[in-house]
Image (cartoon, rainbow, N blue to C red):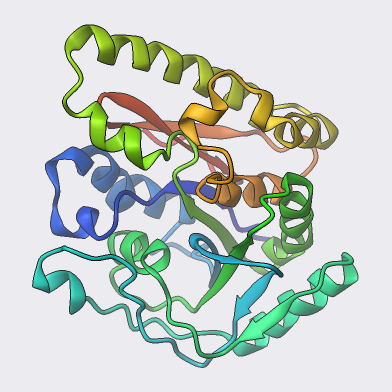
Length: 284
């Protein structure tokens, strides 16, 4: 029986990965090569659907896209004209959306269905590179405005049962680092300042990896529930600005007891960006 993988990937900045931005070279490579291998695309284990948790849809209650199809939401600005004509015509999955709603209700959450909102760039940018055929149904899932890690872990735990039906779970965010002010400034840092920031980033990533890779579910949950206390957390994700971290928390909640945590690293603006995943072999 195929148990679908869980992946908390880094989607890059706006449409830049699709546009071939040089600063995204490493992320582009991973989305085109590593993630398809983790998902088993083109093999008998290819997932029959994808539930994608996007950092770019923040709601009070867990909200689930439920249309037969969804237009794209170009939720960015000041990019070339081609960025506003991108297409990703994968089908939706209304039946799966209702299954997720039921699973969330059973977990004591208060989910909502949304058949109208378009798929944002947290969905169509990575998936365009990962699966350009657009032949796997997609359900988009929001993160919570509260940024409550326990609630997001519970969402992931409720989604976990879908994996046995070969439904993959993808978290689309930027878990290692998403601070727009620093992202803009870092490109002009002199070497010594960049080295100091990288040292802080390495310390943060090490603490995060220790939490995510805990051997038990209890340990993983405890570590992520306390993520704001990790070194440099507020610099990597500003207070009340942790929406790009939350997809990872959902994914960690969907990992099974004792399931090995694997990861790979991309380079972005001189620092390491981690993607964590479960249910697949190590990719190089």
